[in-house]
Length: 247
Length: 347
Ligand SMILES: [Zn+2]
Image 1 (cartoon, each protein chain N blue to C red):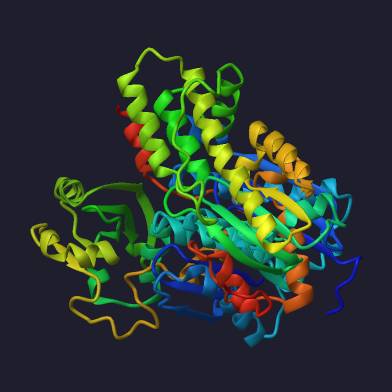
Image 2 (image 1 turned 180 degrees about the horizontal axis):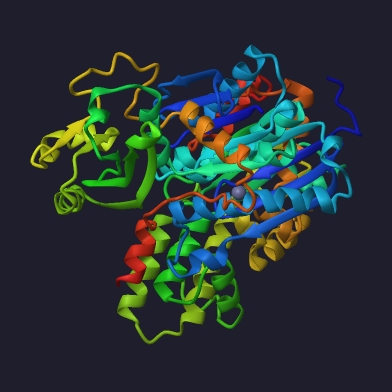
């Protein structure tokens, strides 16, 4: 099994190839939003490095967002087109799930005594995207989604966390940006706060294609990829649409 | 790579509110041309909303490309190159087309060609009239542009004049919205004008007597002021008089340009070139002065991907492919692209 993962939902462009056991190759570019310039050359370089063509892949996985709208669309359009030409199945996953699961791949003190993982991405305009995942310690730290992706003010998230009063680990660009506001939540730790983030091969606060590939590979191996809807997860209507509806 | 009459190019266009794909062989043999318009989606907003357009492009792109391939009666493996609009246009909209175009080119292992949308409009007339007499003067009029171009051969052109403020199509849109007579503005004014008297109001013809540049913002203001002072005048008469003022200026300046450069042909292009009065007046005045007047079909005047594929074929033949690291360029100018191609002369 060889799955190509494409993640352009953040400022970063990341690509990876691998299966449910390991990642053969991956890399990321802090692309400063030059997604369309970097993505195809990145895929080209990645596949050439491991010596395969797109026709030898088993499937393509893509991050559907929520995130940077223009970036998401570059990745999703590219994945749709490549999967069409090479007749490959396409697996879509949300960015918060990808971000959260990045944590599974490293042993961290923070995780040992936490109950939930909360990925938070900056949505600008004082808003964040977030979801919530329960840590199954019996199964060695596997994550199970207990709250679907949503968008809202940081205050809404804080309320959500206070209501729950569970020991939590937060991560993501939104968690970093609003770290000072999140401090008011008891039993909450920002990922890497205690251990540092130097153990990571990539920025753990951004969704990464290698995590996307691992997750997609598990779905692929389990045969759970038929009829996956491949559409961007915006969570927010265009401004003009909102103004038109509320006029 | 050898480029000849059997070279098949897939064209992709997504610069504004049309998602389009086409298959063109040998530069001007159109095997298929599919245009999916988002007019209905944007109508309620009274104009193209960039984020709404970008979302629609993503949904429509794959089906439109596949339909173009199917209608052409070929398999995707027959495609020899992929040409895609890289600008000018709305950045979010352009990015969808460029992503799809590059992925097609990479997936099929064929050259990718980034195409200037404005340059492509110049090839639209050639698609229907491959033996167009050169040199030609092209009047390119759309929602975003009002340009007079001297074209000496395919791919060889220079700019003669441009608007110094609003584009002609922009003026049509604004006046249609102001008169509240429908969307999109061009066809709405055209239809309303059919019922009105173009001589009823004498609106100013800005810069009619000097140079080859245009200005439409003064006309727009005087229409708005006139309506505020005379609220009872029928909107049909206002539409007809306004349209007549715009067309007068466009025709006079195009004729002047054609005479100045010693052109053989006058060519219309761009969305406003679908305007019925502009077409009939250009034909009447241009032919009267001894010029061959080329009026591409309305489908070829408005945005489509056949012209992108055609421009791509010429660009590939004359300049080779683009790199896969090329980006979208929302403010790409016509002259900017000719300078890079090193064949046009810049004035
Ligand atoms: Zn156009």
